Image (cartoon, rainbow, N blue to C red; front, side):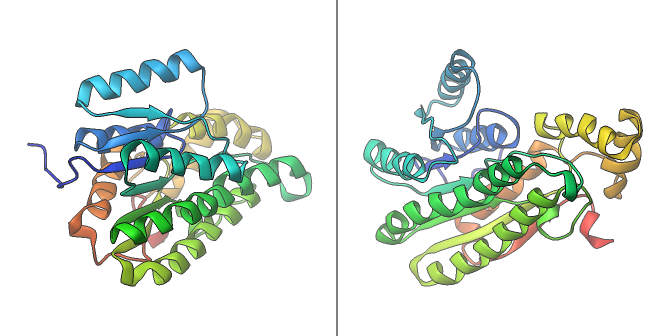
Length: 265
């Protein structure tokens, strides 16, 4: 039986929502009656099909905004567009992310800059634009999709780990600033979820470590998770829906681990 989290008619921006975790989160919010602003990369016909399907399936409005997460002006415009179209902005999910795996001495400078821009700075720029809207409303929910790598490190992921640790600092700082305005800011820290991003890492990890892709799956990726299972979209969505609902009003500035026990080790 589906749980009603009381989100009917609210407006949510989900960055990086054309695939993977972001798309699953946008769909879960739409299923609760939220109007959605999608954002992300991909082939435009495929994005339009996904947008139309989400809108038709859940009977909500779904817009697509193609803001480049490396361009602050476009990110601010995405927030302005949501407010202009719907008259409010209730939920911001900062999910956009990219990855590159390499030893630090070989890590390409352009990949470092890209990962910091997309995984960390974009969350700052979106939050900066959204907070005044939420303060004026007297209510808002900001959820940053961090990672277990926002709390611990793994080799060969210097940029990703640095960015996700930065997300944790941003989350805590924003939470303190908005605490008396009916706005919360929290982070969800997933373990490994079988997304296109994780699947792409398998070959990179195999190359960096000099082992087979099968060994990466068994001995590197799922070795980190005591359950030896991938985290599912539904498990992440359950945490998200709690945090953005009224039930989550006193959850603020926290990291919610959904990682099969990874960080407990």
